[in-house]
Length: 543
Image (cartoon, rainbow, N blue to C red):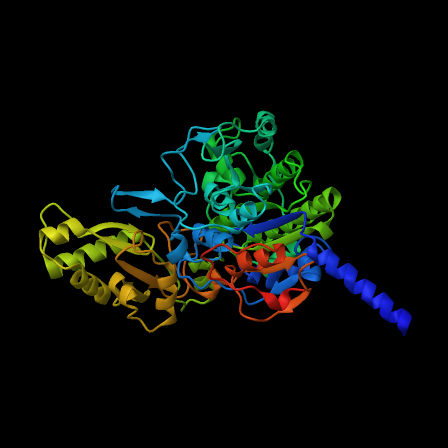
C-alpha cells in the first residue's frame, strides 16, 4: 500500500506539473457558417481518427453552444469569440453599418488611416473593435513575447481575431496581404509565398465529388434551380475552377476559387508557412494562431446546407483539418497544443428547398429594397411627404436608420416615427418582432427576441428600428442561394470543442456560448480574461 501511495503521489505531482506548464501554442479554428447540425448529420462520414473526430474523441464537446445575440453574422461572431462579448459591448454590430456622421455605409474593419500592404484595396484595421481580445491579453501577460497571428480568407475574420496587438493576414485575389496598422512591409517569407502564385495553381482544377452515394441519401438533388452559379462555377458536380473565362485568369476565377475546398487547402498551407517561419511554439511562452476558414460560408451561401457541395466540402474540410493536426503533431506535439474549434454562425435552409419538400411552408425571401419602399410609404402616409427627401436614410440588413435631419426639419419626434413604423412592420406576414431604439434604451420589451436584439444593439452604430424575420425567412436580394443572420437555432447553434491537457474529454450538455471561449482559454493559459468579457469559464470541462 505504501508503494502504491508513492506511485499515486508521483503521478499526481507529474500531472500537476504538466498542467502548470503553459501550452506551446493555442490554436483557435473558426469554421465560417458551420451549424452544429453538420456534426449531427455528417459525423459518420468524417475521418475516423483525424480531423473533427479527433477533437471529439479527445476533447470537451459542448453540444448546446448557442449565440444569444440577434444578428448571427460573420463579424459579430468572430468578435464574440475573440473578446468574450456581444456587439453591445464590442461595437461590431454587423459586417457593416451606416455611419450617420459620414453619411455612408462602412465595413466593420474599414480604416482610412491604414493602407493595405500587397494590394490596392482600401485600408483595414481593428479600429472599430471597441474592446480587447484573448490574444491581446496574452501579449500583455507575456510582455509582448507571445506571437498572436490570425489568418483567413476574409479580412474581417482575420482582423477581429487578431485583435489590437496581434497580426492579421487575409487573401485578396492571388495574394495574402495585411495593412500598415500591423507593419510597413510584408515579411520576406510571405512575399515569397505570393511570388510563386500559390493561389493561381488551382486554375482549371476539377472539384470532384467524393461520396456521391452518401450525398444522394443525405442531400437534395445535385442540380436544382435555386442553387447559385456565381462565377460560372456550375450547379452540379464536377466543378471546374476557372471563373467566367476558361482560357485565362480573371477576377471571377478568385470568386470561383473561394467557392471551393481549394480555398481552404491554400489557407491551411499558408497557416503552415506562417507557423514554421514564425517558429510558433519555440519562444518559451504560449503563441496564438487563429484560423478563419471562409470557404464553408461561401459554399453554403451558394448551394445551401442541404446540397451535395456543402456535404462534400465539409468532408474535405474535415480531412484537411486532420492533416493540419498531423502537422502540429510533427512540429511541436499535440500534447503541447490547446485547440478550440467553433463557428461564427449557422445557415438557414434555402426557402425553395423547404417549399419543395413542404408546399405549405411559409419560408421565403425578404428584400431590403422592398422593406425600404414599404417603410417610406407608411411614413409618408402618416407623417407627410417631405419634398424631395426621404424619411428613411438607410437600411442595413435588419437595421432601419431614420432621417433625423428631415424629422427635425418637419418637427417630428423620432419616438413617434419609430412607433408608426413598428406598428406597420408588425402587420407584414414575415415579420416576427420589431424593436425600437427607445425600447432598448428603456428595456421595454418582454420577449427573448428583444433580449437578443439588445445584445446586438450599439447606440452609436445601430439603426432606430430593428426587425426580425419569422423562422425560415431570409434576407435575400437574389432568387438563389441561402443566408443567415437571424436568432434561431439553425443560425445560432454551433460547435464548441476544446482540446488540450487542460480539458477533460467528454460530452457536455450545459448551456454554453462561443463568448465563453475567451474566458475559458484565459483560465487555461493562466492569464486575465479580456477586460469587458461577458462569457463564463467553462469550468465543468477543466482539469
